[in-house]
Length: 109
Image (cartoon, rainbow, N blue to C red; front, side, top):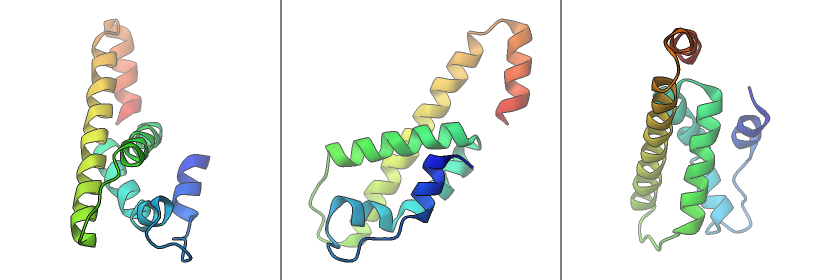
């Protein structure tokens, strides 16, 4: 497992400021990693999707009245980022010569 994912999974929710960015994001961190792994399978792709999700979240923080609305929004951001990563990687593989496509296909699953 990569260092980024280890640090993502091992972080505990900061208790002193429950409304801060880190507290709200880390509350759902393990769920986000689980979903990204399910969609992508590859740890490097999961890292990329998590970074993109965190970047999207930090750039577009919104006010949510209910925690459920925030969680739903954050999960949707992650799913969109994971699908974008997967499409990007598949396009890169499609541009490879045929002999490299077979090699990449065996290692990406």
